[in-house]
Amino acid sequence: MPVRVLAARPAALAVVASCIATFAPATGRAIGQSQPTDATPPAPNAQVGTAPVAAPAPRSWPTLNTAAPRRDLAPRLAKVLTDTPEIPGIGAAIIRDGALVALGVAGTRSKDSTTPVLPTDHWHLGSCTKAFTATLAAILVEDGVITFDTTLAQSFPELVPGMSPHWPNITLAQLSSNSAGITGDMRAGGLWSRLWNHAGPESLARWHALETMAAKPSDAPPGTKHIYSNAGFTFAGLMLERATGRPYDSLIAEHLFAPLGITDPVWGVAGADTAQDAKTPATIWGHTRSGKPVMPARNADNPPAISPAGRVSLTLEDWARFVNLHLVGHRAAFPPAAPTTTPPSATPPSATPPSATGLLPQTFRTLHTPPIAGTDYAFGWVIEPLPGLGTTLWHNGSNTTWYAFMRFAPEHNAATIVAVNVASPGATKAVGQLVEELLRTELNIAKPD
Image (tube, rainbow, N blue to C red; front, side, top):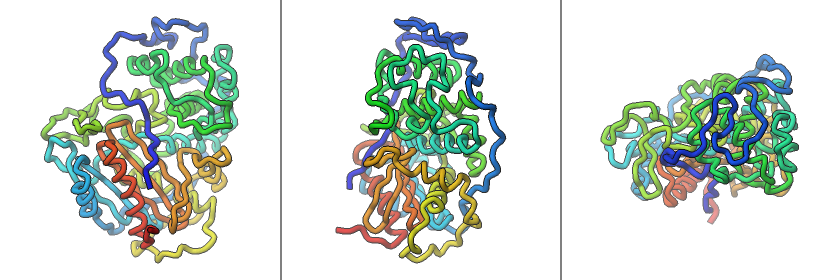
């Protein structure tokens, strides 16, 4: 079946050179903004109208077994490169019964280089980041810091006078599930350029984006229509910052990454602050759809302001740790009706006890249920039944120079992740097919004709 692309867009491949409005650090206003507002944001770390930050609730987190013997996927991935030569490099992994049972990489870090991709390299996950942001929101909801019903008006009362109808009543849950009714296009009025030119705290840029976009009518009443929106997840991250008084990257590092054992996340493209050579690249490079290598740099990704919507880069192992969290959590929230019909993995599973789900089962039930009846988008996950595999949850992402895809089949306690350093049509099609193929091969479940 064709791959459904849910990708961060539009991507910026060069710093905006024109001298468009920048931000005044003291006020957060865009200099030269055609219609300045009297609203000035509090200091980026100030708390407004929210409860004090609670101490993290004691949790038992699932542990992915990464020490057991694993199969090398390199031979299968090499065939993908042969069949789809426009892909310079590829990485993939399979999770089964709480263990990383297979992992591999193939190809080169850049089309113009012979430097091979390594298993420890970072991959840009694009809009797969949305599931991470929704998970962080759920953690803080469980901790009593904020609720999924908290509205933009409650979080940002200083912006309410300038908000169009519907915006004040948009909730954290709606922003975290693409059900807020707001557009994903952040280019109107030069906003995208101003986000690029912003040199201050990311949270201040997000605040300005909210101020700008909320002044215009939403596309639909909140909670009534699925509209894919990078802006929505950006503002969800901003709400978490306002509730805690801390930057988004610091919050997610402490509350989600550290407990899962993710110790080396990168925001943006890995290697942006590293000396690079086209012939011997220090990290993986992305590529345009036409195949031109893009050297890692700050301007080789989307603006930092939209980090909560699509800018995290992880190693395959760390990415697998996150997917395993949701695999374990889903099985606790929706216990399989019967034992899996496929034989268990030969690799010993992790020692994770059944109760070690990180978040409460009812929280995963919320995260994995579309809030709008008749739609398939939940909180950073698309719900899709596949013949033989049962209900699967997936998401993909691209900043137009990378492509990543994650899918898990909870009824069979298995998942696959695949990433490449190009997002051409041929590459995205090959990745979508490979993700499902690896799952079916692992589980010995043929795809119906």
